[in-house]
Length: 128
Image 1 (cartoon, rainbow, N blue to C red):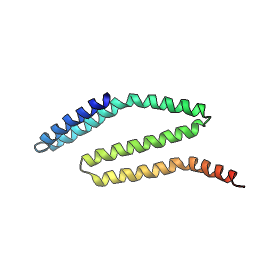
Image 2 (cartoon, one colour):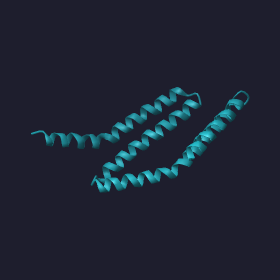
Image 3 (cartoon, helix red, strand yellow):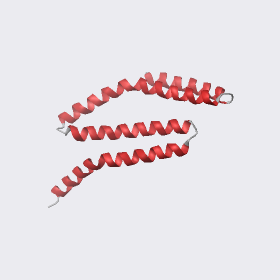
Image 4 (tube, one colour):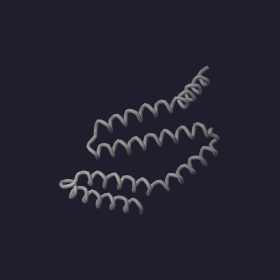
């Protein structure tokens, strides 16, 4: 159960941050960023398994790789945006976090245009 290890590591680092923050706030931020990087690297291997599963399912369902890649990019943008915004919030920069989230939303909208166009085209063809 890797999640138990990750949560345990998060608790330990959180306690260290609470202790260190009073005297050395810059170390607390570095510790938080290091934890975020370690957690990201721990789950990175699992992402490949999910991507392969999505590709297999898309192939079986006869879905174009272009649309699958677009959906995977949108999911990636959403996760990276959330990750970046949370790191900024941890550093006390809520305004920067909000701007990162705004940029992520715009990029998701732009990436979704081909899929929206396909859905609308399909609906138009179904209507007599």
